[in-house]
Length: 120
Image (cartoon, rainbow, N blue to C red; front, side, top):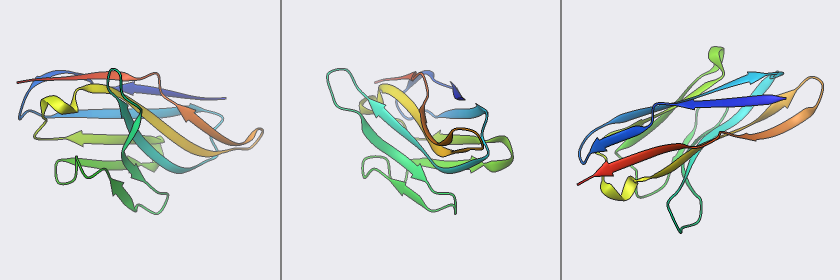
C-alpha cells in the first residue's frame, strides 16, 4: 500500500506564504503524476496544481503566478509553495499521487487533507 503524509499547513495573514509538502511511502516503484487539490467548506474539490513525471506543470487560473508546484523524485515528495495568499485560498488542501507498485500495479492515493487558513 501507498501512504501519503502532508505537512506545512496553518494560518497566515493575507499576503503571506506557506509551503505544503506531501511524501509518499510504502510499496512505491514509480510515480507518474502528483498534484494538489483543495476543497473549501460547501464547495467541490478543485485542482490547484499538477506536475507530471516529466516536470510539466498545470495551475488553476486563480493561483497562477502565486503558487508553484515542484517534486523531489528521490524522496517521492511533492511541494506547493504558496505566495501572496488571499482569504479565498482558505481551504483544506489534498495531495494526490498516481503511480505504480511492483505488487499491486497502479495506484491513486490521496492525502488526509491539511487546513490552510488565510485571514484578511
